[in-house]
Length: 295
Length: 268
View 1 (cartoon, rainbow over the protein chains, first blue to last red):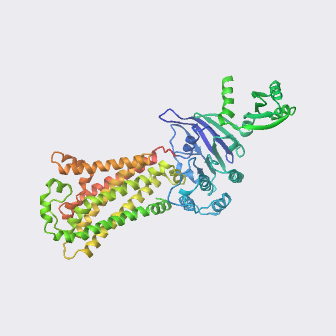
View 2: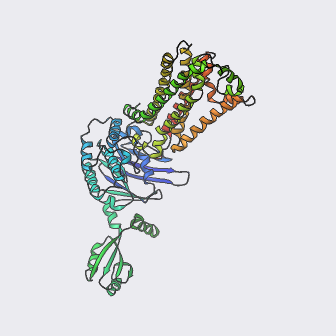
View 3: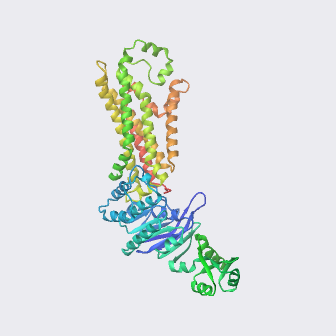
């Protein structure tokens, strides 16, 4: 459904995206991971036909996203990363404008989405909070039930309850065969919904893999607090990857094999275990850098 | 053209269009209203004679006023009309394209199955519609105002309409290059600044050129040399060559703007 062949865009400052290649079959939810400034939005801008590639091409449903931009939009729903609506109207007027410009006839699904996301469509856009704008944007992207939905950082600004409703909606559409491309800078945001994911760094695709393999490769850091400082010292002798020990606390890295981690800790008196929040580079890119060095 | 977008955009800009139209019409009526007292004032022509000739020439007031239409043309179309319409064209043009590109809301407009040419053409039509509404309201106010407020004074309706025709076409060109900058740039303020600067330079060249004999070549480089309200009102110039020229130039500017917008990278 979506195909990127050696998509390259070089900006005058030397940045850009280079030889981005991946394809997404129909009905797949595809995650597009990368730290800020890695080239996620630039890639999406090409898919939307906002930019002309320096080299390579992007196809949606077999059509070139630059040349056939207007035609392709019939099949696409899009949520931009930076939410900025037209001012001087309320949420409903905006949705009606976009619907009207699409020539959309049925509004049942739109109204259902508004009801489920629970927001007041009569609020003027300039008075909306970030989360509320995000909801309006999600409705605008989904309401015409397109075949392809492209979402740039979809859950930013949504509270946990709304994130869950959003995931429900994505899953329902997936059942109907909708293809998704979803960008994010955090793995946890996409691991619940995506089948496969690509990781992009400095404009280059690092890897395209399915989510389960990525979860295996994900390196998590745990802060384990023991009952005594002696126990914390003892854990260093186990097979676990102990990064540091300070008094009765140890920082332990786990990658893939959680059973070993739990079994090893079973012999100790544990007070608490905390997951160390890490950014994407720490989770994955160290791993791929090491892989690259080894080969 | 996309009807939904056109209707919505016109609605968004309706407030500013109607206030410019009403403001312009009221100013014109005010000028017409003071005409009788000025025409009957004995000191006026002496006062005019006492002023430096180049100063009068700069504002198109040489030779005094014989008709209402001359007077309106000199007093209103010579300066205030130009100011009001310039502000409208510059502001609205930068809001219709550059603002949406700048803020990113253009992404939503383009994420509909409408080509960029169609979107830009629709936005251009909104600007031209606004200009026409303001221009025609002013013209109408002039005709009706003189009918009601002035008694027994010669009023040349035909030449007055010519003043309006050339005036509207002049602003068709000014809105054209403003729209061009708006399509070309990613920054709303830059678009507004550049089109504003160009307009001020044109106006300044026209003014300086008319006042100074050494610099009169400047007049010919200025767009405002096509609009001489007092001369047109006196019927001393043939307006059709100018009108055709302005119409063609404006059309080309809009066409180039739409074409550039359809071909360029957008940072949305």
